[in-house]
Image (cartoon, rainbow, N blue to C red; front, side, top):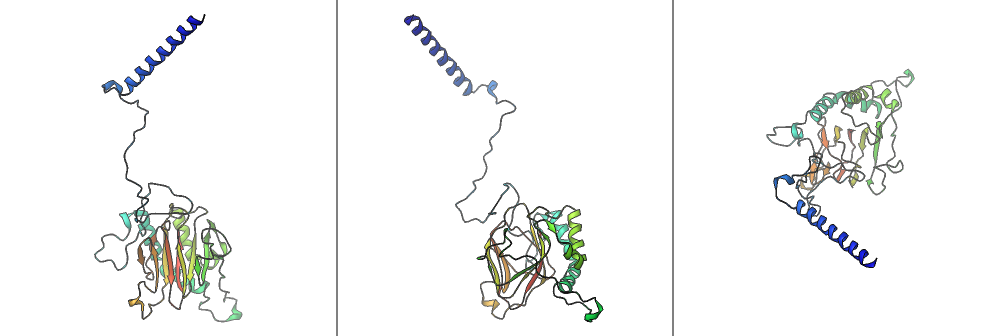
Length: 286
């Protein structure tokens, strides 16, 4: 019994070795019959992520979808000479949004002055037509979310929101109907980022205030700035290493120009400052 058992074990081991040799031979055979099956994956060599280099790239704090086209700014600077395209990649959707919002600049600016600053034409307090200015509706220090960091802000930064975390403010719509109409039209055209990470508000960065370097939560959106009020440059701005009022995204610095939209990717590290003595105001939308 012992001999038969040993013989059986030896034969079994021998068979396994033969099958293994056949399998390895078939795997590494160079014959044409050894093509991979139709449902197999093909590995394509791609570029390195270059994670240890100084190249600027998106660095969102929450989520990143790889493979999306990205640039710090999607609009050319106003000072660019002989520019062929205003919008990166000549993107038709971004171009449409920029042109449409800019065409409504005067109306949006007028509504800001009337509703936020209370600078309407009516002066008779007993007429019932003089409305109390809108109050800021977002405390960046206590509300939470991507902007809530006491160390991030210096000075004063006021929000008057139409879209806050994807939710619309009907009170804003009542006081700023034209601005709301512009945003609603973008939404109907599928151009508004309407998730809980979507925002649209009058952003008032008061004088001698700043927002330190930070990045947005994801790389799925682009952000538009429509400058409504840009303070004049200080006398010493020419000798300074940065403009009086500006924004830096990655390693690129831009100034705002009233009525000229700026498109940026806020998943890059970016910072904002206003070293003037008066507020800088823009309509921000995703």
